Length: 275
Image (cartoon, rainbow, N blue to C red; front, side, top):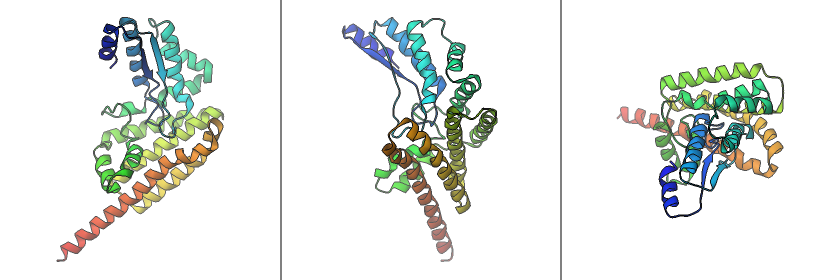
């Protein structure tokens, strides 16, 4: 994605930097493979087209539901690769991450940052699993928010196999989580896995909305927000938590409206079937 623009800037003799990213935005954790290819592409293009250098970005993502640990692999890889591009590989990242957070913790950080590989659809800035959170935010400004939300989430639902593989993968992550000693890093991983687990429930709910499923989702989100608030205050200004929390609140509101819309549709069908 960098080559065309950098080639033009190089021909114009303009000084410029190329900006790759940690790929932590709009996914809840990170997309490790996206980070890897983005950084590799930026550095190789910068070398080829005489850029001043490369800058690594880590976006705030409208309230940071992802935690700082998911940026570590990108920071490690970019930092090392900018000094020594050739010879960099996955094992180098793993070794440095091991020394930073611990071997077991590093393994789980890298694994959780690949949950998107259970999906066969590429969406550059998000995942299907995380998409309902994004659409709940974007659809607030539509004339009829719930109709826009329904249309957009149904266009990007996980299919049966993707959802099955994602649930199995999260179960695998939970088993690895159980082997970790208590620590601040484990708390972050616990919170993230709970969020991903709850978003799987959201996928089931969108296919078959019921009061029982909605109550269970709300209960899990409430549990998640208790943990998330503690972690948020550790890293950020306390007053910013409400903004972060609003991402979940927006989704909860959309899910409630979604159920009400389904009930209205069923009522309309029953009434007209009696005519």
